[in-house]
Amino acid sequence: MEIVRTVHEMQTYSDEVRAQGSITGLVPTMGYLHEGHLSLVRRAREDADIVIVSIFVNPTQFGPGEDLSTYPRDFESDVHLLEKENADVIFNPAVSGMYPEPSLTNVYVHKLTQGLCGADRPGHFEGVALVVAKLLNIVKPHKAFFGAKDFQQQAVIRRMVTDLNFDVEIVTCPVVRERDGLAMSSRNMYLTSDERERAAVLNQSLEEAERLIKEGERSVDAILNRMRTMIQSKNPVKIDYVSAVDPDTLEPVTGIRGPVLLAVAVRFGKARLVDNRLVEP
Ligand code: AMP
Image (cartoon, rainbow, N blue to C red; front, side, top):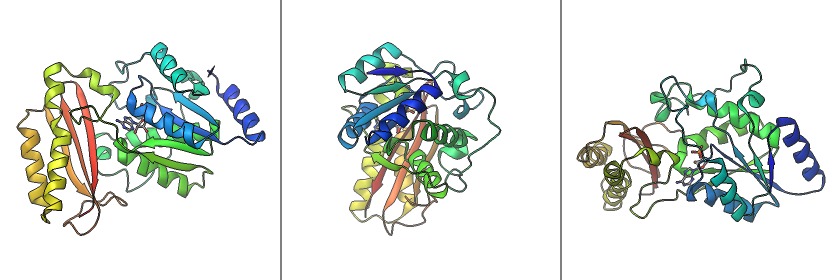
């Protein structure tokens, strides 16, 4: 496995493997890898000849007061895990390499970035779209792999790729969960053991909502109220949102008439946790 640290080296490598006819897959991450990330790497290993995993804590997607400086990092452990998965390359650029100057170019995907996490984290998805656009241009992968845990993120990326004609296939992989259903996340390490136990309510509320819908409940208010009550009973610091949206437009639905994305963002202790579930009535 190679570790590539500069943009130029990464571009040269990608050009070479593409010229040899290899199918390349990119898994963009911020490191501190867990089974959720590794599931994307395994899928990339199946779908591509050359698997490139980027590890880059992207400053432009963190807002003021967010956890950029404390975001967990463990590069040695990441290298070890990726060696076991037979990844071919880790792309680990320096911030100064990715942003030699502040970017005057912005990638703003309208509408899809307005609601859900976009409302609570202004500028976040612009930072994400910018860094993913840069990574796609640097690595030039045939396929890029994203997790459904960050559903809004993959929706924004898909739209950016379509609108800007990036020549890449976006593959979205299912949410990987802990035994009690908590979606795996690098930020789970911020939780105390008590908060960690209580946080399982996110997935429980999504399962309950799915059960209600499958049993015929069609009132969005009734479903969201039940979810809020369940989450509130576990004393979170704050519920950022509990929403039911159209999975394509991410706009709130007023009734359950087709597939619906139930999505939650809740703060327990120092962690802001997100989860979602796509439900077919
Ligand atoms: P991050 O390092 O948090 O930026 O995540 C990198 C990629 O891994 C993103 O595409 C995430 O959606 C994905 N990911 C993170 N956690 C999970 C999970 N529990 N299940 C599936 N994918 C995940």
